[in-house]
Amino acid sequence: MSLPLESVYQELILKHYRSSAHRGEVEEPSAAVAERNPLCGDDIFLTVRVREGIVEDVRFSGHGCAISQAAASMMCEHAVGKSWDEIHRVADRFRDLMHGSEEAARDRALGDMRALAGVARLPRRVKCAMLGWDALAEAEKQAAE
Image 1 (tube, rainbow, N blue to C red):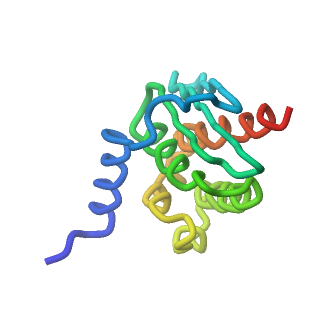
Image 2: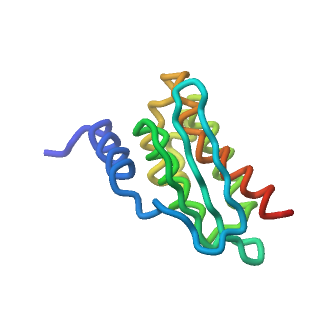
């Protein structure tokens, strides 16, 4: 007997929340960014190393709800090895997901991030899910300086 999709998604979110392979700080970062959600107090500290326009490594630390921390983990997992253009496409698609797009919820390019589709039904939590992405956008600006 298989588990309902919601149960699988819930387990995936908890896995990323509890044991992300991307927790910590990058050595010799190109950028370091702190972001905070003033509505709930969640925070993310993101470090990124970029070489020749490719995100070579990205890691985060912080405190907050399972949504913010799992979303940051999933984002880091996706960003490593990608160009900024590739990251922008997925970030835009993830934003669509957070706004309830059923098409985005089926988009395999989002990988594990599709598990966060239910956040769209919780408008106050969308900022939590976007916190890592906001930090990554700021890190891109810093790395370009």
